[in-house]
Image (tube, rainbow, N blue to C red; front, side):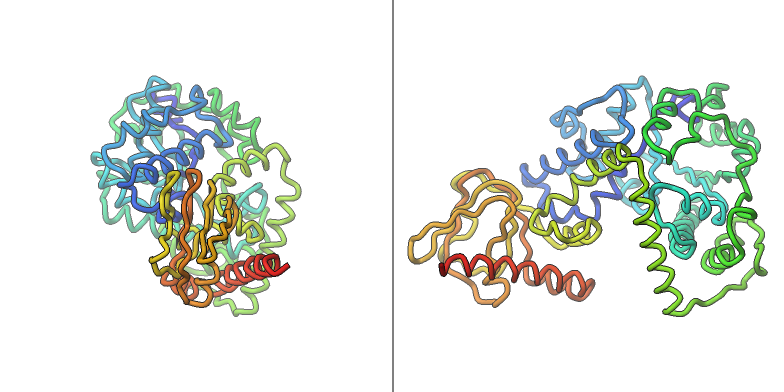
Length: 438
């Protein structure tokens, strides 16, 4: 709708949400290789987006880097959005990623007085929608928890920033009276209202999105004015009660009447109930993934592979855990001839070779090549006893460094993942040592 008013509004690639959690893995951004790698990954993330940012097929990396007023992820995000806006003849843009609420401080620090739109919908209808969607949580317990947490963040920011910066839009009011709601929104954004906004479903982006995924199957249809309170027939009483128990305070605050209880009333779920909810949620998600259109699944996989497949050594760990692990490592870049570890250096750090070739020269002067996908320093990391071998870069290389201090933090925050990583390290070490004794 806003695109019909002259704003650039691309399908979100979730650059901030997906890369901020692993930003530490890129290392010091004042180092040129680290900075350029982050620019590269951001560009690729958008280029692999399930809905293309037409007419852009590929970004000029140098241009994106040069547009940045500082070396930060939010600066790259802004450069990408500016480039898209210019390519579509727009002078301003809107990002539709719901995760933006988690980065208000960063956005405020970089942009000049940005404005925010808080679009909310009844949690029970949201729950019904997600139970059918090709992505997201599937059990009412998990859907409601995520919805409530996000709304609380939005409401807190709305109260902190004030009405001049945050404009609230009710989904139910928008669908019932789109013209009135859009005129009010345009006044907030200081842009003219146009009838074209009411024909957003006819846009090329809307038609394109419908062809890409079942998730957006209604985007090429006029506003569905009766698309509210469907949960009354679509959800059973138990599901509604779960949602109202977990998100009731937010429903009350946003003016939604409860169906299964009174204001302030909630149900406390036992650990056993939550465990059962989680098992059912995972089973339903697996069932949905299996039924997803193969082409849609491949488009999503190609985008997320950019992040998760960087740690080839951890290929047996699921995608979510790999993303968590990346937040505990630092990325380093080396050129041919660089010394990664000198013979005199004492190091108990662990390295993962992402690309390139390294050469290890132990005391015996027998050289060993270490290639992409292999770990380095695993014996010293496990035993805590520093080795004295030198490691030289033979080809330009990217490495992840895991320090013992970072691993200790991982053990504290996620002991299950820490044990799994340690098991894989030990497994690889045992295979290598067995091979060296043959």
